[in-house]
Length: 154
Image 1 (spheres, rainbow, N blue to C red):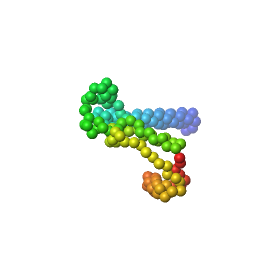
Image 2: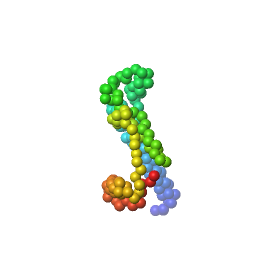
Image 3: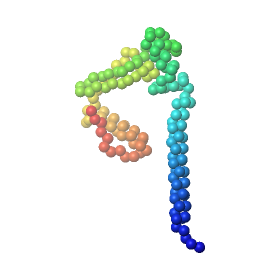
Image 4: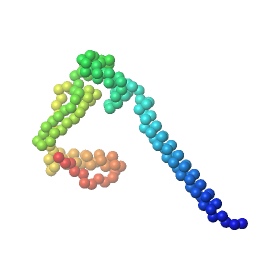
C-alpha cells in the first residue's frame, strides 16, 4: 500500500472548499434573515398606528399635512382641545447659550407655553442634588456599575 500525497492534499482542499462554501452560504442566510427581521415591523404596522407614531410618513399623514397647508380641514378633524396645542420649536436665549425644544400637538403642550431655563451653578445645593440623582439613574441603567467622572458642563 503506497501513500499518495497528492490524493490526500486534493481531498483536503476539497473539504476546505466545502467548508468555505458552507460558511459563505450561512453568512448570506444570516444577512438575509437580519434584513427581513428589520423590515418586518415596518411591514406589519397598521397605517393608523404609523400615523400616530412619530417619524413614520404614510400617504394618510402626508395628505393630512397637505390639507392643513391648503387651509382645508384635514380628514381626521381635530377637537377644539387639540387645535389649541403647541406645535413647532420652543426657543430660550440665555446668557451665552440657547436652548431649543421641538414639539408637536401629540406632546399636549398649550399654545401659549414658553420655554424658560436657569443656570445651575456647580457648587450649589441644587447642582449636588441633580448630580446625585443623575448618577443613581445612570448606575441603575448600567446595572449598578460604579460610574466615575460624571460632570455637567455648560
